[in-house]
Image 1 (tube, rainbow, N blue to C red):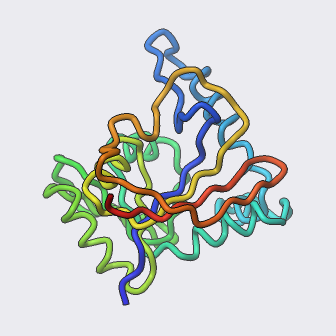
Image 2: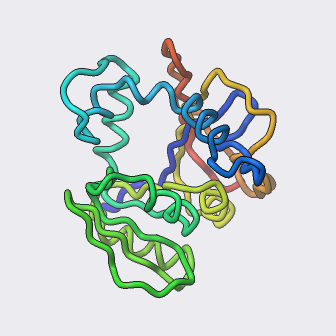
Image 3: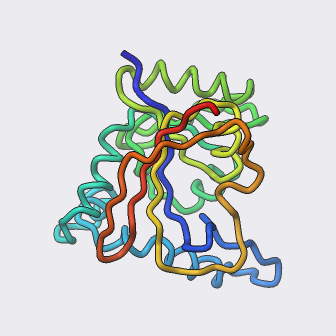
Length: 211
């Protein structure tokens, strides 16, 4: 039986999943500081340290369980070219996915294999082809739409997402990349699945249905 298609993101309390890019900030210091504030719930976790091979230690608890469960359910990921370009510069040599990743792009490029089980495949035929290939690679596990925001929105508006989770972080951006900017609200209906507050964030999970 095929798994679900889902996404899982951290979001500011005012609805942004990434800061706004600033052309007057060549070193991206402000962007990085805001992004790290948004993701602050992840960095202390034992699973985060294990996955990036940062050594022993780290916090356990529900946040850690959720991060681990999200990783373990994922058999393959899909992402957009912009997210890949940013990550290619930032990920360690052993990229943190450890599964096949399908990059939606117009660029023709051979698969890029990294140590630890991550291979990036570059798909030139659109989001549905990328998802078909990811489903095949994932087997009975789930496919995660990794981002960025525009790619997630494409899949939501195409009716291809079954479920999503948001880690609602107690920070305010004021501007940036909104998760649901341009969503086809007339087509998409949400069914609450779970709400779990922790000391750092509130984890919200919704099933997606066609309206």
